[in-house]
Image 1 (cartoon, rainbow, N blue to C red):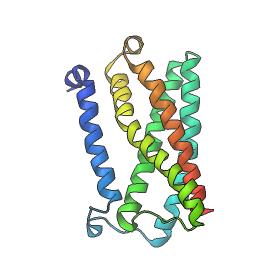
Image 2 (cartoon, rainbow, N blue to C red):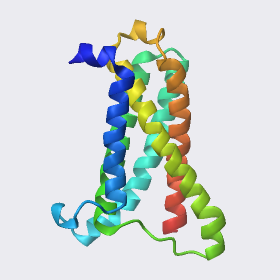
Image 3 (cartoon, rainbow, N blue to C red):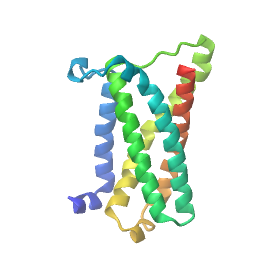
Length: 184
């Protein structure tokens, strides 16, 4: 299996991206029947946005530190940091999708002017960047998992990774801004 993935990283990243994004949009559009998912207590559902904001903030710091580590040549710290960033992102996504599948998206309760000219543009950029990041992250992750450290520098991993990390950091940061606009 590893040889297949190694030879077909772009295709495998594409398939994983399509499946992942289909799951995301199914949950966001509430296509998943609510009865299929076990329902957590209301206090847990109410806590998810706050937990996710904390996850986003921590993930931002972790990914930024991992990016700094690779710029300083510390490959092992970079690898661990990016793995932690992926794990944090997966935790965020699982919690977010679970809550959205059950309750739907959270409505903006502030002034219409702020909603139209601040909230929606920030939310749109956040969502677009998150969607664009998915295939890029799968691509660099699969390269990292199927190549030796020495080989990675001869692949697209460094170039695509810089783009993916930049967009990922912006998306994480805007996720915290969206949270602040919705809940404060």
